[in-house]
Length: 101
Image (cartoon, rainbow, N blue to C red; front, side):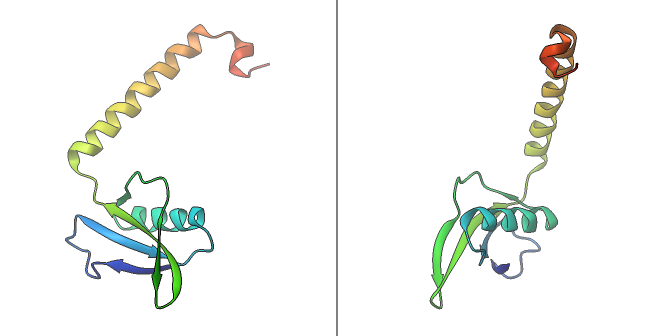
């Protein structure tokens, strides 16, 4: 479960730290990414959540940020390019290579 967001009032924050008390770092990242998506943030590309001790409890912490319009445009462009490449490959690959009987 998400145990802390810093800053507490993140309504105008561009970056936050999010703590999770999940049982392992992978579950913690999943919880943090879910929180981020629900609150207009994305998690940074750290491979692992950092471990912290808060009042003797081991928590996992990650940084999240609000995606900018420029980043969103770049992501949409990359997605469009991937879709075009996939469509082009559909016409090149034999049916058996595409997993179609």
